[in-house]
Amino acid sequence: MKIIIVGGAGTIGNKVTADLEKDHEVIKVGRTSGDIQADITQPESIEVMFKTIGSFDALVSISGTGHFGPLKTMTAADFQVGLQSKLLGQVNLVLIGQHYINPKGSFTLTSGILSEDPVFGSANLAAVNAALNSFAMAAALELENDVRINVVSPGVVEDSPELFGAFPGHMPVSMPVVVNAYRKSVLGVVNGQVIKAF
Ligand SMILES: NC(=O)c1ccc[n+]([C@@H]2O[C@H](COP(=O)([O-])OP(=O)(O)OC[C@H]3O[C@@H](n4cnc5c(N)ncnc54)[C@H](OP(=O)(O)O)[C@@H]3O)[C@@H](O)[C@H]2O)c1
Image (cartoon, rainbow, N blue to C red; front, side, top):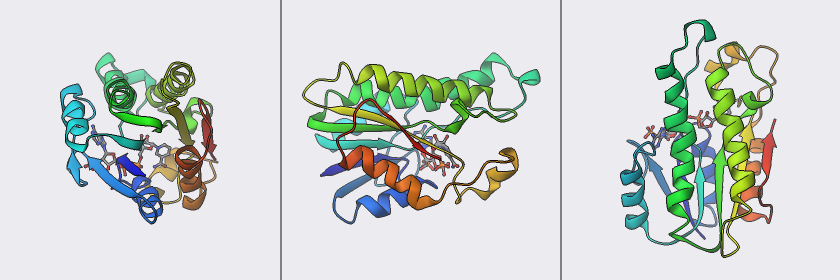
């Protein structure tokens, strides 16, 4: 399969890439890293990326950022960070990518545990994650040519120790558990699912 991994050089992305590239052609995309550079917050940049790559069998997005900070000082501009990057960036990969993906292909997006188990300072990312989960469930009903879509929702991962302090009482998820969630979406048959890795 020809698989695009947006965020393929990131903390989670590099483990998913190492796993999938054993048996598949993987093209890594990042803002500054990867084989091809694209900014998912810019629709024109996404369009150029797909035109450069051409048709593909699977797109995995493990990218996008959000605002993390106290509600008391959160501004509309802070909240926009998650909406424009992690939410709309990943949604646009699907809205534009549906016109380039091969029949029977798949999209896999990334949300996270905060939608159902929030911590202090997570209002933006919790809302963004919930929206991504709902988007995938609804989009799965309409994607044509047997194209599938799922979301992987990881807990805080063992390779992100800098986050542990913000997630008191959360058990870090081992990387093989997270990698297998992406394998289930890309190589399996599930569709419209939120695949929990926690
Ligand atoms: N780490 C965790 O414990 C955890 C848990 C649950 C959910 N998540 C979610 O998983 C995703 C990845 O997390 P991570 O910890 O692996 O992040 P990371 O190490 O910061 O990696 C993020 C990757 O995404 C790319 N990226 C970011 N913004 C982009 C943009 N606008 N356009 C194109 N590429 C972009 C980065 O590329 P460049 O470096 O080239 O910019 C990088 O390759 C995030 O959505 C995060 O919220 C993470």
